[in-house]
Length: 69
Ligand SMILES: [Zn+2]
Image (cartoon, rainbow, N blue to C red; front, side, top):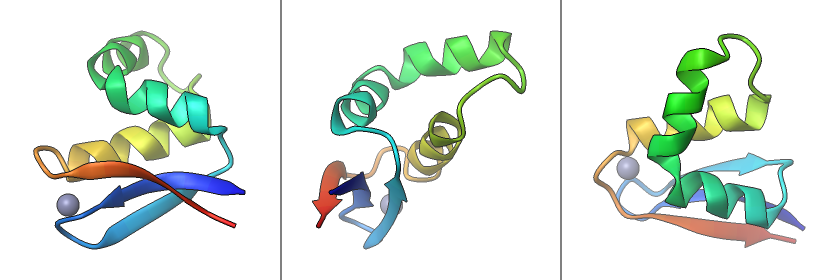
């Protein structure tokens, strides 16, 4: 099972190797993750960087957690 984010407005999605719970955390705590990101330049896991990029790009849109088999 692969989890990811889906923007309902743009019909775009990204898929991640991270477990569902971590993606849910990132989406809910996006502002916290961004604060952390400022202080650990280059030390973030790829899925966090990619997730934040996606959430940033779709800021204000309806982004949902999604999955595929
Ligand atoms: Zn969007």
